[in-house]
Image 1: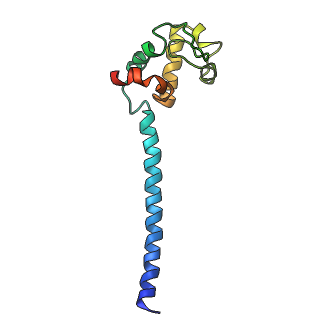
Image 2: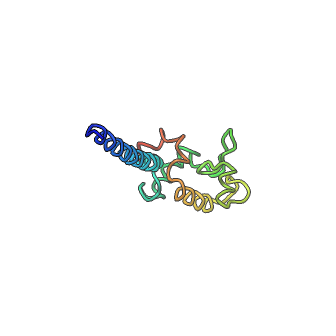
Image 3: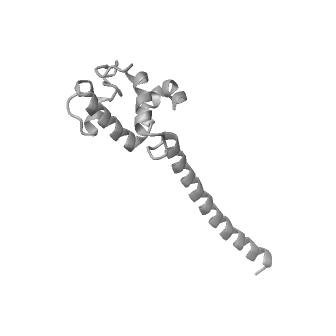
Length: 126
């Protein structure tokens, strides 16, 4: 067997190993990048600070506010999200304390991403 052929096989092995390493690094960066974009609670500022900043943007401070798609309360929970967090009834009918409790729970699970639509309002305040 010629040296060129042996060298070629060695390069193919290196290329396959390199491809696997590049793929692994790319996947890690992609997953890590997605987490950074949503700012999980552990990487973001204090939950209460963030949530206090969101309230004027979402509901104007009105715990009974309801928007055109049915999201309600201080944090504008969709009913399906509210129920998924364990809430009963509609968020706009819950106490302010319960709304805060559910918002903290959602923030701990998903970071800032549930409030991404209002980021132009709160983004510069964080």
